[in-house]
Each structure stands twice: as C-alpha cells, then as structure tokens.
Image 1: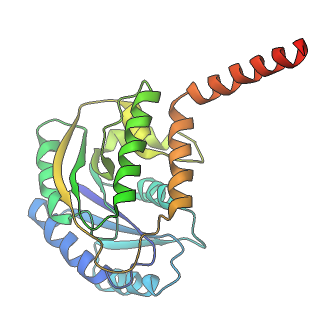
Image 2: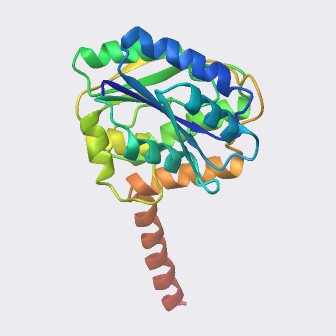
Length: 243
C-alpha cells in the first residue's frame, strides 16, 4: 500500500466527520492506494460509534478500539503496528493539525526524505502558559540530550516504512515517539505550518499528563537527571558521614 494515515482519537465525536472528509480529500490528491486507521483511545463519548459508521461505509477506513484510555503514544504505536503503507502519516484527531498539509509532507518524502515532520510557526488558540511551557520543554529537552529532537514539533509527521519497522523493534512501554524517530536517524526535514485552534471540546492533555509526558521524554533520552541525582546522593552521604 502506498500511504497509511494514523489518527489517534479521544473524545472527538463532533470533529470526526469533518476530519474524515478532509483526510480523504488530502489522501486522494496523492493516491487512490491509501488507508486511514483511527485508534479510539478509550473515548467516553460517542466517538466509537462514529468510527464504526465510517468503517462500514468507507472501505479504506478502519478503526482499532481500546478497552480503556492508554494514552496518545500507545494509540499511535497501535496504528503503526497495524499499518501497511510505504509512507505513514501520523496526525492528531482534533483538527489543530491540518490534513491539507499531508500532500506537502508526501512531496518532501518523494524528494528522498524518510522523515518529514510538521513544524509549528504559530499556535493559535492556546493559552500563554501552554505556549511558554511548550517552548521551555522543547528547549530543556534539547539542552539535556545529545539527540537532535526538532524544536516546536509534535507527532504530526510522515515517516517511511523503514522507520516504522525500526520503531516496532523498540519495546519501551513509556513511548516518546518524536524522540525515538529522531534517534533512529535517516534523512529528516521539516514543513512549516500554523497550528489551528481547537474547534470543539478541550484538550485531552491536562497539566498532569503534560508533566508526565515531559518527564518520560527527558528521562528516556538523557542520563543527566540520573547523573545529577547520583552525584547529589554521594555528596549528601559523604556530608552525613562527616557530621
């Protein structure tokens, strides 16, 4: 198959019909040989019924249904485990990442890039706190790790099938896919876009989840926190012995 599009879904019942239409329109600019894989991450609304209806009426659309909420990264990983495309697009289901950018990502892929990530120039409709905390996280992560993780990018990207095969061999339970994809390497480039504000509902990433995600990202790709804690422990033990 030429193209797979993976869409994690959590409480997006109002968005799904428009999202599906826009993804189809963008995919068909590229090829008729595509699949759309929705992953319902334990939604508490009627998202699953929307996905069942779509899958029954559109032969190129499929869904995976989780028994509970396992988290965004696990949902994307489930899609990666089941996709068939030579090129795979990961896009969030809240329409903040525009499906219309997919043909541009694919164009860069055809130029020879194995990873084409969508880089945000502006983040519409987000609070000042979220914008500042996001900038702080990406720059802190960049300073703590030796891996070149692109700044101001999410999981919205296109990856080659060879990247998918590499990710399948990485058994981490606490996933940080954007870091793993950067670590794998290959030719990578960016396409810039303005992120739209959320049309319906509220983010599935409250502060607690954002903090947990940030900690997973930092501890997965840097030994500096562990080194700091170890050195502090040795110093305190030595100081206690002197006392």
